[in-house]
Length: 270
Image 1 (tube, rainbow, N blue to C red):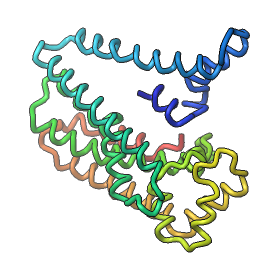
Image 2 (cartoon, one colour; image 1 turned 180 degrees about the vertical axis):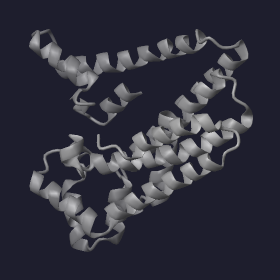
Image 3 (cartoon, rainbow, N blue to C red; image 1 turned 90 degrees about the horizontal axis):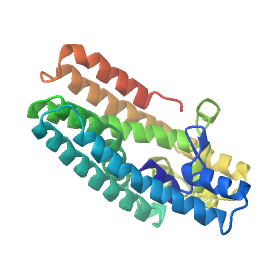
Image 4 (cartoon, one colour; image 1 turned 90 degrees about the vertical axis):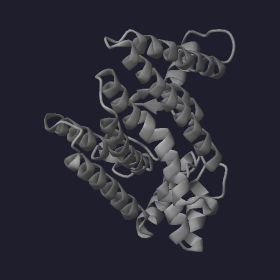
C-alpha cells in the first residue's frame, strides 16, 4: 500500500531514502537500459506493491493460531484493505476540489478510512484476533485505534507541510502536491482573500519557490489553523487514552504498551 501510495503522491522519499519507484527509475537510468526510466520505475513499483499482498495473506495463513482465529484475522485484513482503498479514492477526489468546498469532516473521513484503519486499528485487531481476543476487547481496540490513527495522520500532515522540518527531515511536499489537509482547509476558511491567494500560488505547484511555500506556511500559522490541528491531535489522543484507562477488557499489564504506541504515533518528529 505504501509503495502504491508513493506512486500516487509522486513522492520522492520514504523514511529517509528514495521511494521504490524512484529507486528503480534511478537504477534503470544508471544502467542505461532501453526505454523510459520513469515508466520502468512505475511498472516495477506497481508490480512489487501487488506482490506484497500474497505474502501478507500467506503470513496470516501460516500464523500459529487456531483456524477460526486465522480466518477472523484474514477477514479483518480484507476489511482493512477495502476501507483503505475507499479512503484513498476520497483523498484523490478531494485533491481535485476547490479548497473552499472541502469540509473538515471530509478530511477526517479520509483519515479514518485511509490512515486510522490501516495504521492502527486493523494491526491491533489482527494481533488480538490471532491471540484469541473477546469481542468486547476488539470494540475497545477499534475505538482507541480510530482516535489514535486520526491523530497520527493529523501529525503527519503537520510534518508534511514542513512544520518542524528541521527535526523531521521532511519537506513541504503536501503543500506543493495540493493535498487538502485540515491545515489547508481551515486556513482557507479563516483566511483573507490575500491569504487564500498565497495558498493558491503553492497548492499543487511542484515548482513553487521556497519563499512562496514559506508564505503559505505563515498563512497556516497566522489563521490559527496550525494551532487548531494541534488541539485536535491532543483531544483525540486524550480521548483514546481515557478509554484505555477505563477499559476492563484490556489487561492492566498491556496498557503501558498501548500508551507507548500512542506516544510514538502522535508525538513523533519524523
